[in-house]
Length: 394
Image (cartoon, rainbow, N blue to C red; front, side, top):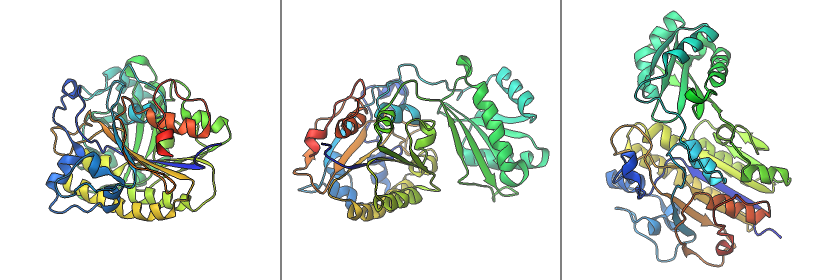
């Protein structure tokens, strides 16, 4: 018999809780996404996260620990090489990345790749550098609209991103070009984790705005994950946000695209009111995309406050046989240098109305403890590594 009929696993994208021991190898010594956000806030109200035990796990400047937290909590260390989105999510569900995905942060993409992309798409490439998505629109979007050229850029992540104005470039043309880019970047020397379509609207500087029609073209996981095991056993595997893109649809039975992190948690609340048996796997990306990469700790903190308010609604909707797991996929300290993710531990908070106890758990050596716990609950083949915490969460 499974212990929980439904498990809701929510990834608060980039909410790191302190530098890992090897952070220095990544240039990330002293990073602490959550702690540094709290230090920058004049006031910080996250009562539901506080009640679950987040501030017992990580004491904060304005938010004290609670004497009797509602949930169990621990830190998880990343065992894979890297600090990107796909690595973190894939590790959660049982895959270990020993070779990091290709990045082109310092050099831009090779001339041979750009030439082939231009030939295949029929568009001249402009940009071809590492940049913020909003900044590159301010710099080059007017030229793209005027000429029909195509903005291509990257970041500190293993990504190739293409911008297209929805009115002049066209959404379907943008997707077509991204599909070509995905095909080209399957070559080992050009292989990136994701190709991302970045549609936008607006006609002149100061008015450009990215839309929710983003689409990620990810590599397929190199092996089966806990998601596949659940799907093959007949369970529901419902994704919210970019989870489907991260796993290239593998193991997903139902997908919901989110317009924002607030929308994503609202979708999760709506799903909690529906009847299903299995996993609801959620990614809330705005923490990372809007505030971490833009180095905006105050708005990151306010996004956490908005999430916390919705979390209170979700907690009320949970049934007695539901388990909630809150975690993250990497750090992105908005007070750190540059605009890259940061190599940090991530939180693990678990709560169910039927839990007999609460408090600290022994820290995990891998994010795969999440997948191992889910697999044991539903009695499907576990990942090859990771430790199930199910017995402690009953």
